[in-house]
Length: 524
Image (cartoon, rainbow, N blue to C red):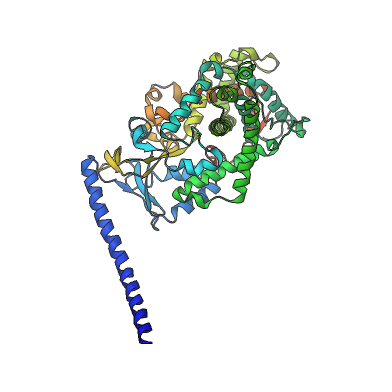
């Protein structure tokens, strides 16, 4: 018995020593880490950050707050509202913690410029690849370094000017959209949902060579030819993206969010894409060359016969292009319906150039002529300013580095960003800064784009990002949004928003931004 008691005592002493040692080791680690950070600050010519935000729970409350804000349609504004509440709001860069891990947030244009351009090689997409891998695989939207360079080199020719000028492919889809508007006979209806169906129809035609035809349904007396996954595709695509956005919020704990519903939606989306990929790969190189018109997939199939590469790149472009345009259109018509003077001025420009109603000069609406519609461009720019398609983004430091501003007693000195630290940047908050847009920064006023000050904005206006990763489809999206806006205003001159619509609107934050409660309007 004595030996047993002795063993038990020995074990108890051993455990007790570890309980004492672990906190001591942690304290020693923190001391040495603090010393090393001071060394890095001196070595890189930086200063400690001026602003450090805390949730009072060492970062264990904030992610759940953010997920709830996302569910309530308030995440985008929550991210922006954190800046005025800083101890020193004049220096719009701060550190914060998520699950005890330190991150930085900024809306400073100089810092955004550094992240996206001048210090591009100091940062990567971080965890985006594993977070988005189940749906998007290895594509331009998820890859870094050589993988990204190869993807960009493969995709860049597909967005050449002669391809984006083909606006005529949109007209058949517009005619179907018109049927949905007319069936409401002047009553209020949900337009945003139609925009998402329109853009997925046009995007799938451009990318896959055949539209998913989601706008064609029984409500307007139209039928579509179906195959596995086609009917469920649009909804599954939306749900899967919603999960990706939540996985991104969870940072390195993204793997906790992988429910059966998410997996099923991914399977539907992949089944849809694989149908078209198999169709393209069934054609010989000679047959691909003989295809009429332009199809993104067929052009890619001339460069690679790998079905996984084709699937991943197509879905990456679909995510980047379809939702951004639909969201932009929704905000355009939301603001036009609230601002009759702006709508009247825009109608005057469109009708003068392209006619209206039965007298619409559809053949005159081209890539070049749309570019010359200055007020239309101002309306789109103002909507992209107030409602950027990707309101907040992030990068991960791949080496010890600095950002130009955020350190020191005035926040104007470089601030240390240690290796493996995530930096989020809020384009949404930048675009609403009074410093760059004046006291009316939160107001919808397209006229500001004719003022000299707006020509000097630089990195204070980055709706399509900037630097080497600037959006390849920027002009494609603007051309499509311009065409759709023009044709709808030609066909339906009267536009009004449903009474008692909330303003400012709640925003739905998936990978891109749209109206949380939809867009309920009357058009005739």
